[in-house]
Image (cartoon, rainbow, N blue to C red; front, side, top):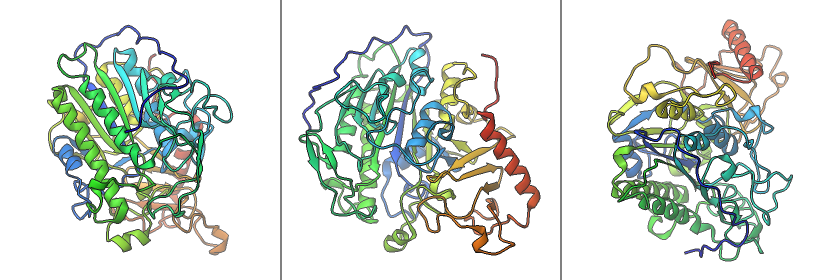
Length: 490
């Protein structure tokens, strides 16, 4: 086990603010998998080659969304959207992701899920992959306190890694300091193609840091936190955010999970993620607080799983959807989303309502009775009626904006999906197509009716110009307005 001893930045955080109202509100456990595809859990894909008994058990006891989307098809922007309720493309990061040395993306004065719950009397803890930037220098100086960072984003405490596990520096962070400084160097992994297992970029590394230890360390921290909430339980509710570093590359399953999945190292690593989720849920049960806790499980984008891997392993990690991680098509951003809330959410229930991970913030605000100001959660809609078993006649989200790694936009309204451009906008070839290379009558974008064409195979751009015109105008308005959630009283 990695020895925990903070060597820098060990500045004690101030105690939590007085609770505005903590009585009768549920604990919140939010688990974010990294690159888990829609078709990986068997509760979404009975033909999945990966055993996911713990995710399946959670779905059997909760509400499963079949039309949920990450706000981006890659990591950093989804994490920003999840924690702030705001589309990330409204920030300086309008494409791509941050690196391990990037400055903080979340503005220090911006309301987040963590700071919202903290203001309502919650203890807040973050565990796992951060990947939202640290500090305010152009290149993060890890020798100084890592602020802005998790502690300025509403978390009382934090343990994890700066970015993806294939990005240096390879260090553990405790609160706003390092567990050990990166005094060593590691070279590039032998496998350079994402998908061949142990992929990482060379760079600085802390003594004793091993990539294979990261998921077990995340699990240990989360379990220890929950064990500390047992008998007698603290008089304050908690918010625990567990951001898994897997099954993102490098695919490094530990020995007990080797050979468990039927999709190579990816399948084994995904089985390990499921086991971690199970151990965390067991710790919640053993602490005697499961009945007072909302559990939310989702993923930051689709799986990095090209057609080559589909054929090689006979496993559709992104289910029936076209594309993969980073793409503008459904496989890039349609993700699992499961919510368990004993006594409120009907076990084994399913909803086809469109949801976006930005909606977590407005939903939790409604649960704890927090009125969102107009300068926060600008793209977040309250899904709590669905949790309570209501069936709204109208869609909760009038429209949803999708965004790819290369900055390609799409808008979804009802069954119609319009994409501004040709190609995937992501990892799948062709990434971009010049209409002029096709011919004078070529469409300049993509239009699909997902109800009739869920695989996004029949482009109706030229056949339905009235839909193209309407959705193009609606997308432009949402991009320029600075928000999609209607304003209300402060």
